[in-house]
Length: 108
Image (cartoon, rainbow, N blue to C red):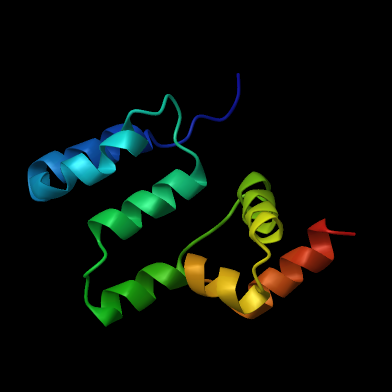
């Protein structure tokens, strides 16, 4: 049996229903997916918590972790759209150094 992670679909649905019901409609298309990817979770975070205070945002950013599949998706998204490291880093709230490091590791 494989590793079972958190049920993000259930977690985010409960957060939206209990605390942010006005955001349900904008999150609905993502929550209807069978399985949520890490990018889906990031998008839900952006939709739900877009206007948090700066301190909370910085704290959350420092504790993000990306699996190999997500990193490859981000790099493919960058390539497909012709984005610079700076643009992709800004879009996903990453450092340019992280993007450069991932390229060295995964784009040999």
